[in-house]
View 1: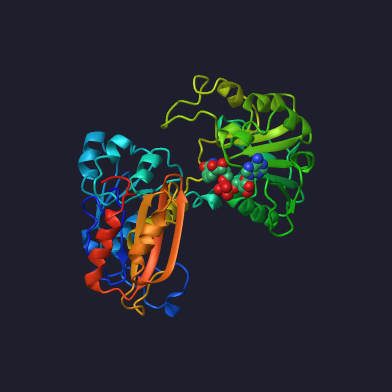
View 2: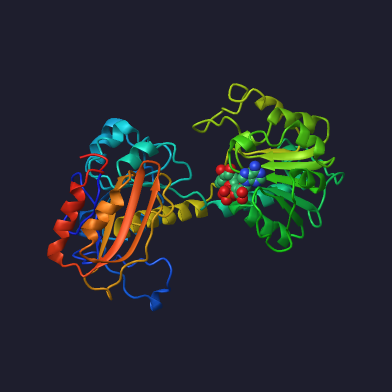
Length: 461
Ligand SMILES: NC(=O)c1ccc[n+]([C@@H]2O[C@H](COP(=O)([O-])OP(=O)(O)OC[C@H]3O[C@@H](n4cnc5c(N)ncnc54)[C@H](O)[C@@H]3O)[C@@H](O)[C@H]2O)c1
């Protein structure tokens, strides 16, 4: 692993990797991905891989979605698939030999495991979170990590739509009563949502999707965000949170977990909300002060609430939603018109399938083209694909320590060739250079590779 440059003559086994070449000795049947142009208008992209496609070994654990498995298998890579995670000793045994690993949340890629991964060039987390990976260790060993943070936005937005109606109609209380054999037909304090005001806090991927759905059901949408954003449809941004709390019948939180969003809805905010309004939180458990919410429900200030996320969440399924987990859990469970769900906002078949596609495509783009857009621990660099119309072009990828003077040395090496495009970025100690150079003979590539490898800015030998 580690490394500096990927090269057409250098197979990605052993410690070095770098140039991705347009000279295309690969026998890849595919390598035709182009992210921007419709197929019919594209020039055929070159096979940028410096190795035979079938040499690339991919280990997929934890039942990674079929969509992702299919994309990688169609590339012609060797894909080994396991339904579960592996015990650490077996994981170490397997990871020694692979170039790509795909995991979900249960596989821990610690420094201890990664130091054995001598051939590894990239990690795919087929999920949202990445804290199961030692991101810093991976970055400093030239290994980008990809995930899929937004594939489930629609699923969360739809859940919230369901909850708005469920709360307005006290649906879950009526249903629970029926399950216990009680017929309790009421209309008191049950509402249509048409014409009601939905206040969205955080107008990002989820908040903006929800805005469109809510408006199509006749709601008026207002939102508060720290950034000035283009409102969709007839939605309206309000300048301060107080305005939203004052005017909204339903308040829903869609902000990230940050120091400034911790307990952003607490006693003061509940006080500012309309009497008989509703609160929904499907963002992060730290955003709502739950003891304050329990008080607001008990006093009747709130008519209902829906919570999908909690400050402490159990690692597995079971009878864990008790006071041992969160001291107020039983108080919350005993309230009326409160929907409690176990962090299922993004848990749909569609979201899993979208995650499979997004992460597999990120892995494929990195292996084939060196693109790191969307990497969570790495500088983000991309150039359009080289195409078959560009003979004797080579893509140089150089991952190095972010220290002064490196670019001068690299450019001195590349200087004998025509550098058509060059892009570089850094993140912390890691710097990433991508350059497309032309007029390169096959015979010169090995020299280029060795010259780059000889520079003293590699992460390790
Ligand atoms: N329940 C689930 O299963 C589930 C699934 C996916 C995401 N989430 C969570 O939902 C939340 C939103 O996700 P997203 O993909 O829409 O994120 P996003 O990054 O696309 O949007 C977040 C928005 O919040 C805004 N924001 C940040 N700080 C703010 C503040 N202090 N006040 C107001 N606005 C602020 C940002 O400017 C941004 O527009 C995240 O916390 C995410 O972890 C939950």
